[in-house]
Amino acid sequence: MGKIRKRIWWIAMPALLTVLLFQSYWLWQTYQSQQEAFVATATEAFHNAYDNTIIVTAKLYGGDTSQPLKKYSIQASIGINDIPDSTPLPSGKVSGTRITYDTTEKPLGKGIHMDTAAANRNLSLDSASPMAHFISTIFSSFTDVIPDKDTLHKNYRKELDKKHIPLSFRLLTNSKSIDTVANRPTVLIYPGMNNPGRMMGVQFNGLPAYLLKKMSSAIILSIFVALLITGCIWILWRIILRQEKLENMKREFISHVTHELKTPVSILQATNEALLTFRGMNDPEKTERYLRHSKTELDKLQDLIDKIMQVTREEQEQQPLSATPANINTLVGDAVGRFAHLPGVTIERQFDIQSGVFFTDVTAFNTILSNLLDNAVKYNDKPDKEILIHVKEGTGHYSFTVKDNGNGIEKQHLPFLYDKFYRVVQGDRHDVKGYGLGLSHVKALLQQLQGSISVSSIPGNGTTFIFQLPKYEKDQAAAG
Image (cartoon, rainbow, N blue to C red; front, side, top):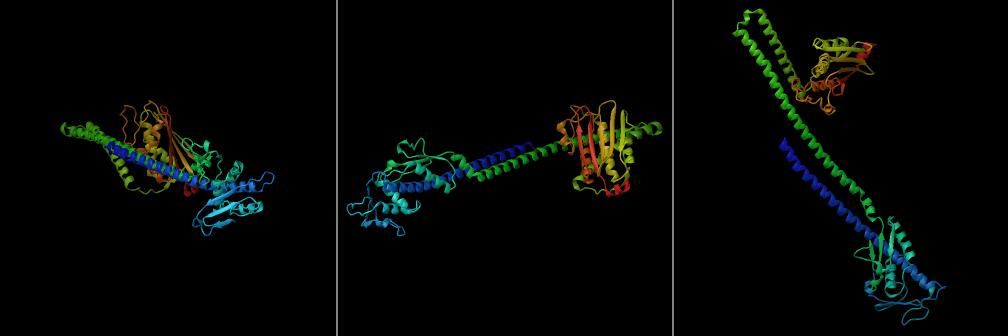
């Protein structure tokens, strides 16, 4: 088993580490994808907000009569073939490959005459349309029109709300204050075609937490997979340890059984030899004494054989039990009679029942109570062994308590008491004979009888076993 444990360890741990590394890589790739998608969405929203803000600023330049009118002309050389057929061109004169705009009321070269109202009408465009981006690019490239920062902030907030992005942000409109190496903004745009000095950026607050929240389902799935694999490895490890413990207990059981078989066989051989060799047959007293020893050893052999057969039957199949009417006082008295005559043993009985008749399998009940009494006597090194049997009738069940003043059991042994071959080690003592099968058989019988058992113990102060058996309708009818 030791080699198997090492093999499982060297197989399970690399597998677990591989899964954890894969999950970490997958989460990192998912985070990067989420970040790229966010930057693309935020950049598109920033372009829309910037285009809208440029158009609004240009309208203010052209229509605010409280300020001196600023005269500016826009000339942009573009190829006609570069403009999609579906894109409506603004009012103006198209000559060859040049479009000329003039916002003043005087003609400018071969331009067009445009008054303030006309300019306002022509600049009232949807910020998301290609024409709005076209006009924004023209204004940003060939004029001194600068978007108002507060207006740009409000427009960008509206665009982000449309995209369901609740993060707060800070606009960086001064290209000199943007450090694209040490402190790179989340979003960067370069408005205009030939004016890179107007670079603008946006810094978002709490972006990592937002992205992690967006990928929360992936994180939960990854954690679940990791925990599932870890749990499977842990369960496998527990099974291996339990199998190893079972193997050790089986080896101890075989050792005990071998010793127990050798002892009575040796005694039987000695008594038989004494009777045959030393003419013991001619001495009736000696013959009787030797025959008594032989009977005692034969009873021990029979008991050992019965227990081994019980284990075999339990592993193969459960023998059916039959409930028959029995008297509780008689059943308890029969079990007590087997131990009451032992030196130093005192067994007290208490009954809190209405009727002494109940239905159960008599043989199974005797085996259960006898095993508990046997343990109470064996694991008690005190000169006065006191045992209490308390029978109590409850609602729908009978409760049987077996309490002793023996050595007690340490807490760490209690969960394993009903395992096959399990024995509580009493230090270096080996004088208590046993095979670790009694309590295992008791629990198996109680399960067949639809009963239950519990144990409590204080080391050095005794142990208390309580088992319950259900009432049947026949019991209630007998009580009535």
